[in-house]
Image (cartoon, rainbow, N blue to C red; front, side, top):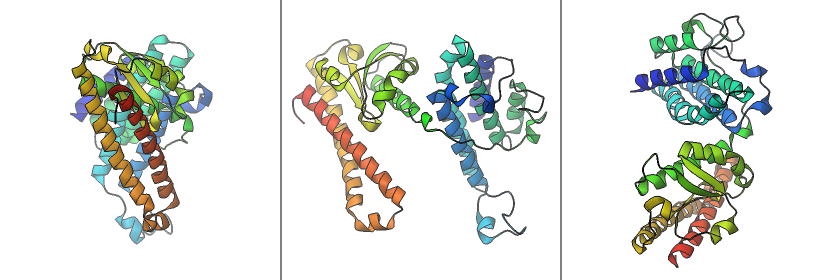
Amino acid sequence: NFLTKLWNIGRILLTKVGSDPVERLDRIAPLSLTSADHWILGRLTVAIRECDAALGPVRPVADGRWSDAERSAGMRLDAYADAARRFVWNELADWYLEAVKPRLIAGGEDADVARAVLVHAFDNALRLLQPIIPFITETLWARLPLRLDGTIRESEFLANAAWPAGIATHPDGEPFELVRNAVIAIRQIRNEYKVKPGQQLRVMLVPMGSDVTTAPMLAETIGTLARATVTVASGAAAAAADARAAHQVIAGGTEVVIPMSELIGSESAEDTAKECARLRAELANTQGILGGVTAKLSNEAFTSRAKPEVVEGARAQQRELAQKVDALARKIEGLCGTH
């Protein structure tokens, strides 16, 4: 299945980027990169590091002798293959390639930037995969629009090309997580109400926290990926809107709101009861998770022995879950009249 997926990804990508050689990524101004560009480059770096860790060190670190730790490190070929596969299928193909299509169609300088990032990501993905998928990767790599003068393609054959190295990641890639979370939420609501995949929906996004700044800039991308017209509203505007709507609270407390009329064409008591039941189940599940995290943070053995970053991560999760519980409770009260 993955070999077929890889071949199809390559064919689609090559069609979209064309045959004109792309610019080197290090020659593109960082300000020209979008949050989606930063996100995929960050995910590529993570994939490379995971593959490196799974394979283990290539040579002894010092004195030409393998230490006991070095001898036992790596050689987890299943983890190596899965890290490379996950990047190509779940991140590059499912998200970045879909998000970048409108930029490639629009043309201009931004399209050139998108082409460069897309080719760079796929180039490095093929390098990661070459040892275990030698023939398909070699064929696809030969067709990538990379320069042959030594600036990008340093070898005629992928088998002789350098192993990829990650680049410094930028925090600008973090906002793209809002896109992914919002699109997943919209798709889940579509599935729950059996809405046709091609049906265009009206969606209201009510951002919280840092999403307040980034949501307006990402609304169009969310709409493109979710087949929806997305508007960004304040909490007050959302409260003033029709309470009969499907709600999904995503990371950071941001809400995705879709009017029931968009989903089922009516707003009957049965439809409202169904949505209330779904919201109450989600609230109960979220409260259960929050209780577990709170209990862990109340355990002195955990807070005193765990690494500071682990404890802080748990506290951040606790704050996020508490925000989600509050938001769900408000929605249930507004739609159903009671918790």
